[in-house]
Length: 422
Image (cartoon, rainbow, N blue to C red; front, side, top):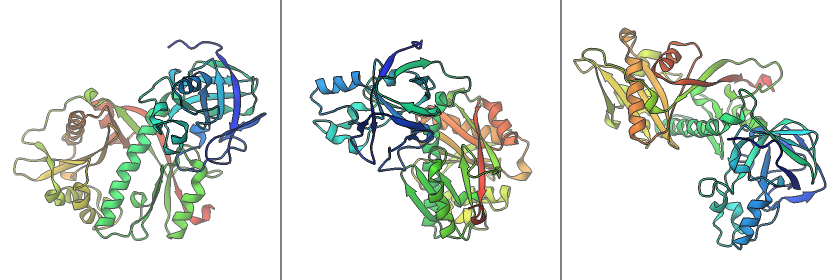
């Protein structure tokens, strides 16, 4: 889509101590986390560096008003009310120069919630959802360059920078939600099996702490990529329960922090995954809840203690395999012995490949690639438009994923936390 070089102006600058409406101000300083003086009542679903500034056009507001909705500038929570632009029709990644100082980058649509009901005569806040009215959605932006904004400032649109974070922000947000849903399933399965996992789940922030199970599987947080400013809330949870924790983040959590490990995020449409011939005598089929011991036995045989402590896998397995949208496949030899397993977690039309492992004596036979292809076929059958997997960069797992057709989207750093880092 062609981007016009100059397109509009700031009509109104709006801030709020929390909640709606946001009220007009003469000017505001814009920093990494948004406009100074602006707050969010629900800070685990709003705000953060990728949703620092909310943009909305007067043209969209006027269309709402023409339908009889009691909406005014600032009423739907936008920070900058503008003229001359329908923001949700502009590609993510587009850079936005505001006045002589501020540069923004479009990231994701701002999905409406219940707080918007008073703005609509029928309470149907979906009227400004990009899913139902693509030209009338608000848009979020991240701040590329700080500065001050004022009513009347000209707005200039520029193409995305190479490697733009904004261009992939929508997919990364979907992957965040997929990982959060998948981890919550694992943690809840462990709790259902009687394991001591203390979970805090609030909006996009989910944290698990398990004093008796070392390692990152049950001592980590989801949500810090987009909500890094809520790190103190995460570390307080770890400290309260006396655990070391792991922090998947887009940026270092403290000065001079070094990652404990890194994870490549690999993606691709399920249909793009190459079919893999099965080794002679091998079959692949789905497991049901009654076969959970097969899954746990293979994982523990391959990893020693797959989730950080002896007995954890077998304890949670029956509950996880009974969880909706969790699908587990196994590869069997000619005498019915399971040689390899892999899981597929579905959320939001994405499929996450998890817990894929091969018994040591069966490695080197292409079983992992065969299970990736089998899960891709299942994801396609279940309506997924994208397949996602995490792997250590340069590992055999990543090479297998690349070989069958997935592509590396990004690399995430994961930091280890102990109380001494405060």
